[in-house]
Length: 78
Ligand SMILES: [Zn+2]
Image (tube, rainbow, N blue to C red; front, top):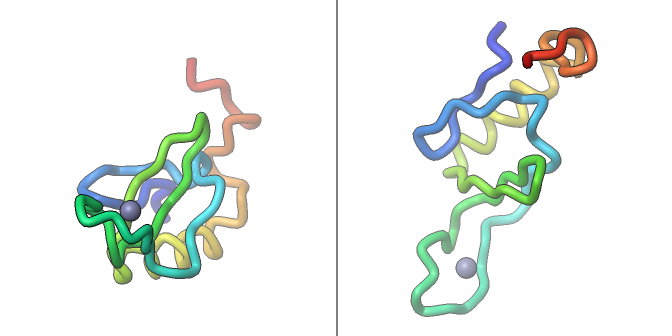
């Protein structure tokens, strides 16, 4: 079981994910690059954009992970 999941071609550690959007993004801007993508919010206000398939995998991984393995409280990565 990896604590990384791939979102938008990036390996994102599950423990950095704050929340995952339930609905596809829509803001009405004609220049928006992310319409129909799902917002994945990380710590420090960072955002990555997931396809529906990636979003489903992220949620599956989060549910399987249960917050234990690799948690920053268990082991200081620095
Ligand atoms: Zn937008």
